[in-house]
Picture 1 (cartoon, helix red, strand yellow):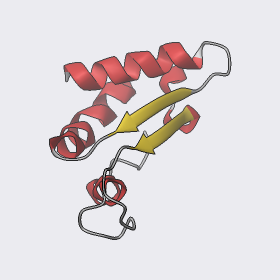
Picture 2 (cartoon, one colour; picture 1 turned 90 degrees about the vertical axis):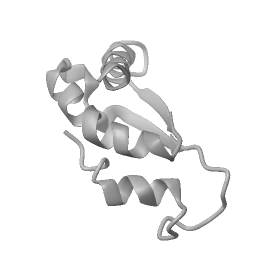
Picture 3 (cartoon, one colour; picture 1 turned 45 degrees about the horizontal axis):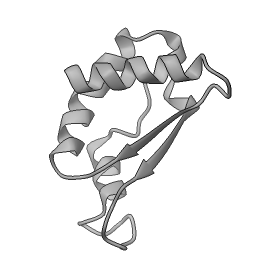
Length: 86
């Protein structure tokens, strides 16, 4: 829960700054399951400024594969349901 809470707090803080955007780089592996499980409740408890619609998300992936590929970081987050917003 600590990582998800830190992400939500940083998103809220960034959204209140100049530009109002929060940028986040996501890696794969065990982080997919952790954030898929813990980030939605953390965002629900965060200020409205943490709205994921104001986020720029980049997938940090050393593999050059399409999102549909089983080893794609982007695809792993899609399958996990993490990209469904609040």
